Structures are given as C-alpha cells and as structure tokens.
Image 1: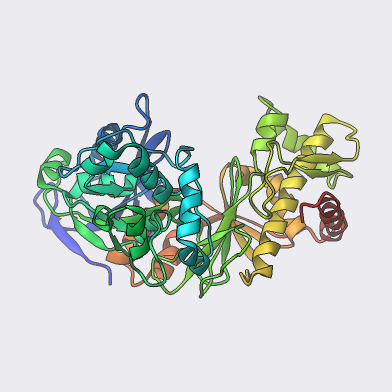
Image 2 (image 1 turned 135 degrees about the horizontal axis):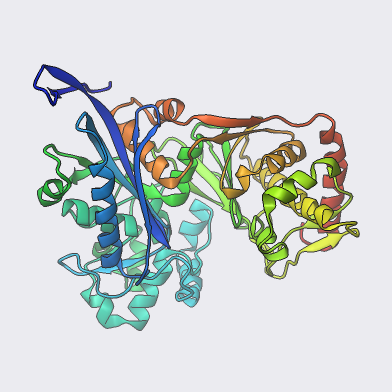
Length: 489
C-alpha cells in the first residue's frame, strides 16, 4: 500500500525515490515535542521545548508547537515526504473558543479541581450513560468543567462556540477546520462510545450540544496543513492532518499493545495499566474505564494507580538509582513486604480514599529498603493485572512496558519474576511516536496492527527468573493478606 514518490535529485541527474515519513506532535502539560519517523519507526528528526510561561494559554501552546514543527521539518532532507501529521495531548483539559477559534479564557487543565461538585450532578443525571460505559465522572472529566463554566461563568459560556480538547485546538490552528475531535478525547466530554453520539440528556443540564465538537475515529483526515504554514515550513506539497488521540492511548500504541490479549504498563510517577479486549468491559466499582480502540472493533480497558516511581522520589530523594540498582543485585529477594503508597488514597487496583502505605518488616540497610520498594511496586502491578483479569480482561504472557521506571534492568527482572510474565521494552514509546504510528496506519500501512508490528522495535526483553518466581509467589501472598487485614481488598 506504500506510496512511491519521485523527484529531481540536487544535480538534476535523474529521479530520486522519496522517503515516506510520518509526523507526531505531543502537546504535554509542561511542554511540547515533535517527532518525525520513517516506516520502520526510526526517528529522523525531533524537537522539544518546555513551556516557559502561561502553561494554560492555548495560544502560547500553538506558538511553541509551530516553532517545533518548523525546526523539525527543516532538518528533514529533500528526499523525504511527510505523509501524515497527527497530534496527541492530555485527556480532560478543556479549551473554550469563540466563533473565530480564539480562546476566551485560559484552558481548564485536566487536573483543575473545579468541576468536582458538577461531577456529582453528572453522575446523578447521566447515570444511565455511566452504567452503560462503566465509569464515573469526576473533576478530571471535561464535561464536569464545561458544566462548571455554564454554572459559574455564564458570559464565558455564551461566548464559547466550541469546547475543545488541546488536540482539537492545535488541529484547528493547523487546518483552519474547527469543531472536530476524536473518540478517545470525546470520552471525558461525555460522548456515548457505544451509540456513537452525544446523548440528548446532556442538554437537559443546560449544555448546548452544538457547542460540543463533531466526533470522528482517530486517524481520519480533518484537512490539510494551511498553505501559509506550508510556505513557512518550506513545503511544496499538501500534508494531511489526521484526528489524534489522548496521550494515554497514544502511548499504548507506541508500546506495541494494540491486539486483543496484549497489555502495557507505563511505570512513571504512577502505574498506568492498559489491556486490549474485543468488547467493552465495565467495572461497577469504578477502578478502571475503557477507551474505544482507534479501529472501533476493540477496547482499551485500564486504570491508573497512585503507586509508582513517586515512592522513590519521596523516600530516596536525590539519590543515584543506578548505583542503588547495582548494590541490590545480591539482596534479591528482600524479606520486606511494602505497599509503596506515599500519599493518602488509592484508585486502582482498589478504590480507597483513606488507604496508606506500609512497611512490614525491619530493613537491615538502606539498600534493602530500596529493594523492598521496587518489589512493592511490582506487587501492586501484579494485583492490577489480576483485578483486570477478574473482570474479564485477559492478558497473555507478555507485557509491554514503558516509562522512566522501565529503564532499570534490575526492576524489570523483579517485575517479571513477581508477575511471572515476559516484559518487553520498546526502543521509543513516547506519545508522539504513538500518534505518528497512527498516521502511518492510515496513509501507508493497511491497519494499525500492521503499522505497530513494523514500527515498534523492542530493545530489551526480560524473562522471569525461575529461581525467584516461587520466592516472590510466597511474598505476594503475604502482601495480599496484609492488604486484606487492612480492609483494602
């Protein structure tokens, strides 16, 4: 299906084949990143910058993104042709724009607490929808923020032509086409992913449906990059702009977990666990929810724990983790049982707003305590997967893993042995890579599955240590016993 392009070489001595490439733009909360990759997933050009001011100003986001696009494209050779451009960003952030597409107030970020009371109203009024899709509204949801604007800033509400996600806003600035979103971003706006429509009950709350964007599947063509931008970038051909994804679903694509039975763990500040199923899985306890797969015939169920690498930042601040990793090699496994929660409250693999971390046992050294925390995160990860499995989310014997915590080889060995699963770490699993792969799946490859198989390359594969598996099995059982004694599970 790959398209072949030809053009004159620099010496005018004949034709040269054009290399097909794909551009992904990741708009984060602290900055933006652009990556351009070829059909094998090799990174050809990239740029990134942090937001030095106004992190809630959508116009400033666009200024930064525009500069990064220009700098990344300028480093491409004349033998490359960009077949697609797609954007990913945070889920739940709301941009209010007027009829010209100009923001009428600072963006309401995904972690903005405004809308907490409104989420309770939504859960009561849209109970049929939440039971149907298997989630509960909270302050992080876009629709909660929209209702807050309606109730508290009526003038802003009336001036707003569209409530958009950051991805939608950047796509508008790229193409000039306003009021388009994708179904991964639409989830937190209250879109019915099963009937694939906005429910009329939303209007009964006073929210006009015409102010909500049109919903398309991720990877559909919105339009082409505006001519003035192409001229600015030095491009003499059209670049199609595709609907994008939330950063979480984009990261899952980049991990390689897109087929039924596959799963991924992002180990950063927190643990984010996601699987792939052929049907919607609902959790009445609200521990996880499901995104609709880009190709609509599958789902991405998963949840986020409050446990993760944050425990190392809190308990071992400023220490050299690589040096600690070297020192614990001969200590594995530790006699400690640790629930490594360093804040109050847990949301997955169980919901308990009063949950607190604990250390069972007395560490003989700083290194042993460090090891115990690594093991504790692995215990929580295993419980997350067991929780999903109990709800019908089946996973195979391989887990794709990304995030800063996955850079530690000793931690990979511990996690693999605790879960008795093979862990595979991709070369590059950024959200920008994921959305670039999405673009390739729509413009070069026949499917997302094929694009992932060709573009996601594994650089580390870790198998369970057969000597450690039974030892960790005993410790994991004790971990569950203590959680049960405390009423957490």
